[in-house]
Image (cartoon, rainbow, N blue to C red; front, side, top):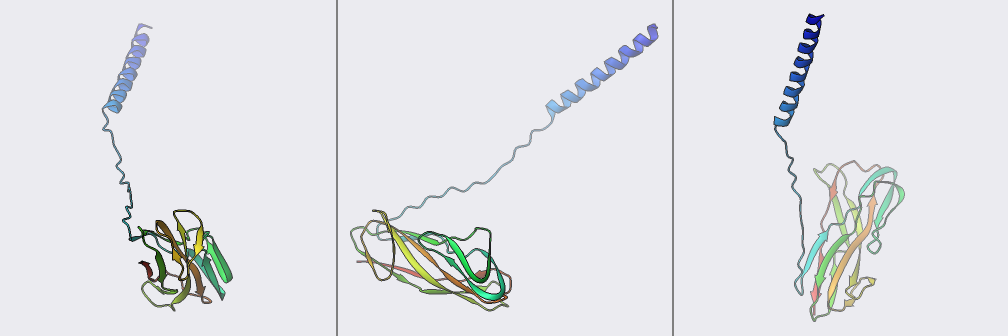
Length: 184
């Protein structure tokens, strides 16, 4: 019986030693840290300037057996479709620009349409008609033509309607357009 007791004590001592060694190893294990890059942005607008803060994006869509349209409203930023186009997700957005007028009056003009070509080619282009809107520092949103706006902080929005042909090939489509702001 004394031998059994000794064996049990040795087994218990061995188990305790192994547990202590394992705990000690865990305490000495290297600590790993994760780094993440984070972007911080700021926009400073000088009098009589204009900066772009967002691009116009008609979002992801599926072209059906019949042609259709996708519209991004410049006032509400809502996206709708018509005809044989199915909207996917909610990634669409209107273009946005910030500007100031100082003591001057402002006129806004620019492209009334844009052609979107498939990146890498190999597909027909698509056309979009553009619609402009703006807010002033006093509030309210107005659709723009050749309207003069008061001076102060301005936010300009561009939306539009993209015409999508039937069975348009998959891919990313891009185009550029111009916004002109004149200060008087």
